[in-house]
Image (cartoon, rainbow, N blue to C red; front, side, top):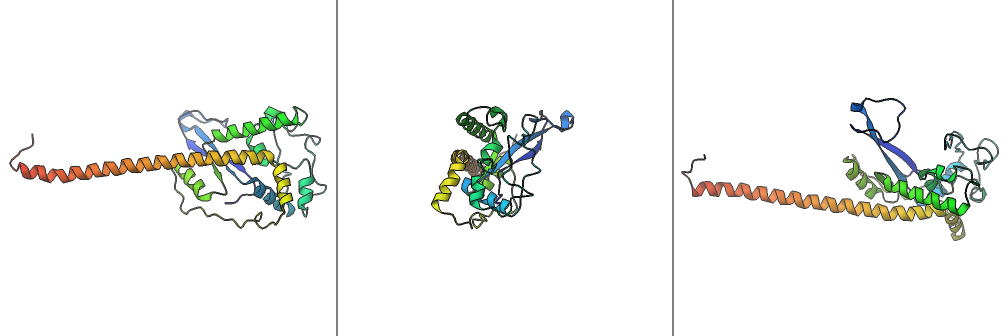
Length: 257
């Protein structure tokens, strides 16, 4: 799986506890559900290039409402980057030059609580403070997720998912590095420009990689501990079975009471 965008999905689990999110309909206590929020993050430069290629082929986000605090952004708050029906055929330079391009820092924005910064109203608080609040909010929400994965680490992502939700995939995840973004040749100056435009995503991704490795190592330690306990129990059971015939042989006339 190599999605062009970071996304948030939910994995419902039936529970007798109250649901953690509001539901559009009322459920009886015996059928209430608990939702787990999960996401996949991607290297910000690759993700940005992938979205550009996606837009270049004619994709738009016109149907996205960008709802925040009960309303959608005004045209002044979120001006379009193009005129006409779509932005197909745009160059990478044009894509980077649009100051309202939602591809910039998309992963932080999708994970953060935008109400903290006045949603899409850029004059609500100073730019530096806004960036800091968004990044910290995204990190907090990422930490609170039961599971998140990294597309650059498919096998570890699969392992964490299976261990977290006690599920088993039929086939192992495959690591595909020959993506559309991987086929784009860009110079070092362009890469640095993309990193600047996605500075918050770069910081979030570094944080996510560290947290991801911590969770992975923790699950591996638990697995090794479980295997040691299981092996110990099997050895004790085997020894107990071997001891039974010897006791019977030593006291052939013994009658159990």
